Length: 233
Image (cartoon, rainbow, N blue to C red):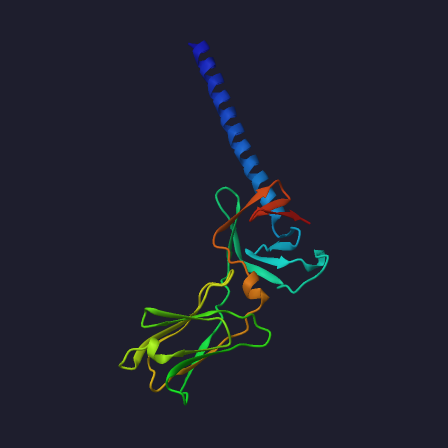
């Protein structure tokens, strides 16, 4: 009887020691993970021409690193900005603040020549040019690639003189299509239209909009984002 009790006591002690060691290992691993994370943020990571800055408050900036360019060219300082978080796999997840859409406007006028429809593009001197699409009554499409365009009214409008006009930009590289105008117009009253462009510059093309973009940590000092390797300075 005493031998059995002694054996049971030894087994209980071994189980208790095993339990304590298991908890200790889990805690140690957690501390290691936390230590790696705390050493990672805040920090700056550099690729060939870009710099990724992670702040402790959860914000990030992806910047041009112009100092590393052999021949500096026109560039935008901020390529992207937003917030970061870590997912369950301890990978970095980036969400950008969307860049505001450029503001276009359309001015309606009456031309002395009523047989035609006239379209004019006004843009700032330093702005990139965009192409525009004019849809009339959902079926007939005009593409404007120059500063002005004139077409015969009889080819495009209804006999009633009231037509649905929809004007938008055409997608260009990284820029989507921007709607500008949609309304029914009496072309006996208005047959001349001026599309006024805002400033469209290099930053509008270069901005990267990350939506739950995942970046992977490689060791303690590297991040791989969009197939680019960023190394902590």
